[in-house]
Image (cartoon, each protein chain N blue to C red):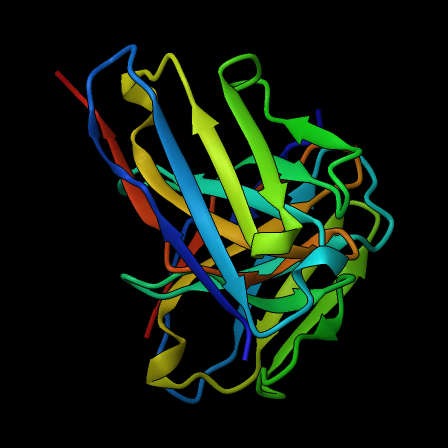
Amino acid sequence: EIVLTQSPATLSLSPGERATLSCRASQSLSSYLTWYQQKPGQAPRLLIYGASNRASGIPARFSGSGSGTDFTLTISSLEFEDSAVYYCQQRSNWPIYTFGQGTKLEI
Amino acid sequence: EVQLVESGGGLVQPGGSLRLSCAASGFTFSNYWMSWVRQAPGKGLEWVADIKVDASEIYYADSVKGRFTISRDNAKNSLYLQMNSLRAEDTALYYCATEWDLHLDNWGQGTLVTVSS
């Protein structure tokens, strides 16, 4: 089973700052890593798929990078609305989907 | 616009059963794999099960295998989750989601299942 470990657990930053969220896999994922954003009381929303591809409607300040076992979600200039929990997810060890435990971002 | 609307949640006693439904609209349902994902109160996301476009492939998380059954009706644009032998640890908000290329691209708002005596 592939385990995804996200860090940090909580990140507190100010508007305009840059956020860097990490997701580390216990085995190589190639580039099949996905990021979601979940705001309080809302369903998760797809942000980044294939490690670096922004989903439709996602602002350009969100970017993803990485391959193998180390992946990063970067938010270049934080806005108050970016406060949320961010999850990474993989399905490289077919057929099981695995999620990381989440990073809570406080602005 | 893609819409996924879950229903069927509620309060059930341990050992009981519930059937969740997900009504899909705004896209060609029969072209998409579909998943159920759950989230226990205050916790993270846990994938539950998914089903291929024609139901020829079905997969479950180990935590629900043998107790839950996923199904779909493409004529009714609907996804289902039959949950039997429910346990307290099955208490969660259950989401349905469309799948594409190893990720979940559209999500419903969820239906809450509470297992308690």
